Length: 145
Length: 186
Image (cartoon, rainbow over all chains, first blue to last red):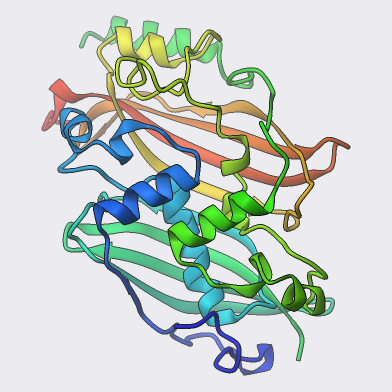
């Protein structure tokens, strides 16, 4: 999906209960390592499967900066380039490991007007077959119109 | 574990609450386009306001902005690759007083991140030079979860630019646990 221009909703069209288009991320070692290094996180659990297993994880796993990055991308892919992410609050659960696609779902839970902005709260979930990897909420604002 | 031991550890941890978790830090580099490009490519995030100068100039942002989730990336400590596994993954030697060694020595060697709450006061632009300071916000009493017994530690980081403007905040919580107590009754 291209970063949402023609398909992005106008703020006046967004309503509580709206579902975001679902997104499935094929998680591979490359995805995990690329995100870790791009976020300057050299913790071996995010690039070395043996280190991660010695710590009790099933495999190397995605770092939190990358998880937050994909959550933000999930939101702005829907809301469009004029969207301003205000906050990302997540509880962390199952690790995101190679071979386990992450399925992102989201639902609008609240909308309000603050000045010239439509402020939208979205409940988000990223899950794989091990369970919920990240659940929580994102607040994003769009110019009114 | 005896009740006396529980009290002693939690009492020692009390001293860290409200105290800094490490010294204030300055980002190695200001917000810059090459690192934005690296992140955008790694996460396949094609939002045009991150790299398309012409597009960004006509957007509400007025110019290129960094992906908001990169907030923490700018101030990640530079790694010393040699010995990183032996240090348990820490980018460098940790020489400041903090609760983690007390918990490690008492057997709470497991570590699991449980919560991250990022707040973006404004988007960052190339040239913004970040600093951070982190405080220990709270430490729980001994808790029992499916991983075993342990303590939840929460710290809060405030991100500022050189001029003292607060640009973001992060709450981070971990569970430090004793892996040998897995399956223990509460």
